[in-house]
Image 1 (cartoon, rainbow over the protein chains, first blue to last red):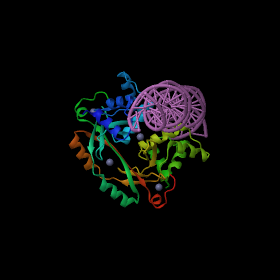
Image 2: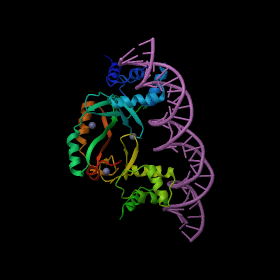
Image 3: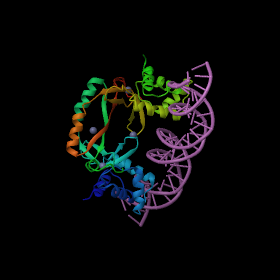
Image 4: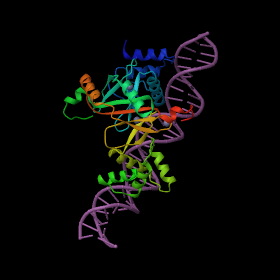
Length: 147
Length: 147
DNA sequence: CTCAATCCGAGACTCAGTATCGTTCCGGAC
DNA sequence: GTCCGGAACGATACTGAGTCTCGGATTGAG
Ligand SMILES: [Zn+2]
Ligand SMILES: [Zn+2]
Ligand SMILES: [Zn+2]
Ligand SMILES: [Zn+2]
C-alpha cells in the first residue's frame, strides 16, 4: 500500500467522497519528504496534466490537516507550508531551512513541561505549537549552495 | 522608567533615530499584556490622535522584533500577532485563546531536547518556535462567554 | 438508475504585508 | 543655532495567500 492509498483510505473512513481532485492531491503529497505550499501543489497538479482548482487545493489541505495527514508549519519569515505526517501519535517536526526536507522528531516529552507551565502561570494549557528549524544531514555536509 | 522609555532606550542604543512615530509606537505597546496585531496598533494610534502610517507600523514592529522587544506569534488559525517581551533571556509565551492575554513562561529547558533531536535525526537544529495556547486564570474561571 | 448531498472550479474579493518614491525629520558637525 | 546627508515617513500601488460565492458536475447510497 503506497502513501496515496493511505490518504484515500483515511478520507473514505471519515466519510468524504473520493473524488478525482482528491485522488490527485493524495498522489501529489504521498511520499513527499519536504515541506510544500498550497501553491506548489497547484503547479504540480498542472504539470502532471491533472489540474486542481486553487480553492480545492486549500479545501483538501484543510481536510488533510484535520485528519492529521499533513501539518501546517510556520516558517521563519512567516510563510506557511505543509509537511506530511504520520497521523498516529503526537509528534513534532524539524524542517531544513535550506532544502525544506522535514522529519518527525517524535514526542519530545511535553506533558511535564505543560504541567509545570500550568502550575507556574495559572493558565490552563490546551495546545501548543512546536517546530524546529535547522540543517538536514545532506545540507550540513554540503558547501554553502543554494536553497 | 516606564516601559516605553525602555523601548526608546533600546532603539537609541541600537543606533535608530528616535522619531515621533516610534515614540508613539513605544507608548502603544508599553505595558500591553495581551497579543496585538499590526492593525490593532494602526487603529490605536489613530484613536489617540497620533496616527502612524501602516507601513511604518510594520517597519517598527520589524525593528522591535529584531531587538527582542516583541515577538511574533502564530495563532491557531494562522493569523499573526505580537506580544511584548523581556529581551533579556531565552523564553516562550503562553497566549490565552479567549482574551489574548499572554505570559512569559521562561525557558522550558529545550537545550537537552534539541541535542537529543540532533542525535536522533542528524539535523543540526538552529532555531525553534514554541508557543503554548490555553485559557488564562481569568478566562478559566468565567462561564463560557465569547472570545 | 435516480436523486440529494457533496464537491468542484472560475472568478471575485479580502486583507496582511511589501515596494516605491517624493517629502520630512533627526541628529551630528560646525 | 544652522546645515546637511542619511534615515525615516506615509500615501499609494501592488502582491499573494487565502476565502467566498454560486452555478454546474460528481459521487455514492438506495
Ligand atoms: Zn506536541
Ligand atoms: Zn536540507
Ligand atoms: Zn504563521
Ligand atoms: Zn484570557
